[in-house]
Image (tube, rainbow, N blue to C red):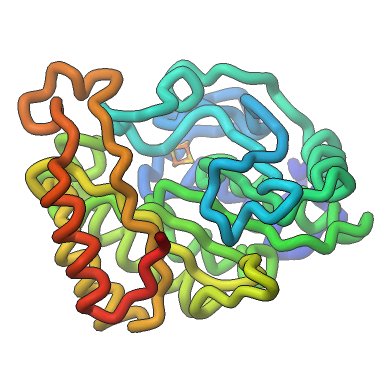
Length: 295
Ligand code: SF4
C-alpha cells in the first residue's frame, strides 16, 4: 500500500483495496494484470485516473432516475467490453474526453447535486471503479446526499462489487446476453453470461429490489435489457433467471431501441432492427414471469 496517492490513504480500507487492485489490474473479469499506476493500459485503455467525456443533467434516462432536475450523469470514456454495435463508440472505443483527478470528480458530483439533479449516475464505471469509489466517499464527507447510480455494462467481478457495498445506492446493470457464443462474437466476452449473472446476484444482495419515493428511485436494482434481432440476446433465459434466481419483483427496462451501428452494420445477424413482434413477445414474457417492466 506504500504507493497509494495521499487522497486515497485517507479513504476506507475498501477504497484502498480497490486502488491496489489496479496494480497489477484485476479490477474486472478481463484480469489484464497491467500496472495502471505506471501508465500501462489493458483492454479498457485507461490509466489509474478516469477520462470523463461529459458531466451534466440528463433527461433521457428512465423516469425513476430523472425527476425535475435530471439524472446527474458522469460519462466515462473507455470500456471493458468490445461491443461491435456500441452506440457510443467515440467514447468507449476512441476514448474521447479529459483526464479527471479525484478532486475534480468530487467537485463534479457536488455541482450536479447543487444543480438539483436527482442522483449521481456513473455511466460505464467498471474500469474506473477505484476512482469512483474514492470520489463517492470524499463527496459524502463534503455533503453529498443524493443517491449514487452504478450504470454498468454488467461485466463486473463479484469480488470488486463487494468492495462497493454501502457506496452504491442503485445498481443499474445491463444484462446483454445469456448465450456465451453470442457474447464472445458481439462483445469479445464469452464468459459474459456467467460473470453477469453472478454480478447481478451480488448487486441485488447489496441493495435489494428497486425502491422509489415520490416516483424517484432511492435504492435497489434496475436491470436494463436490450432486445436484439432474432433473440440473439437470449432474452427469455435472462427473464427466467431474474424471476427465479433474483426476485419476481425485479424492475427491468426492456429496451427496444436497438439500431445497427458501428461494426454491426456489416454483421449479418445484427444488421437490422428487432421486429415489433420480437419486442412485444419479450415484454410479454417478462410480464408473464411477474417482473416489474418499466413503460
Ligand atoms: S479494468 Fe481495464 S485494465 Fe483492469 S482488468 Fe479490466 S479491462 Fe483490464
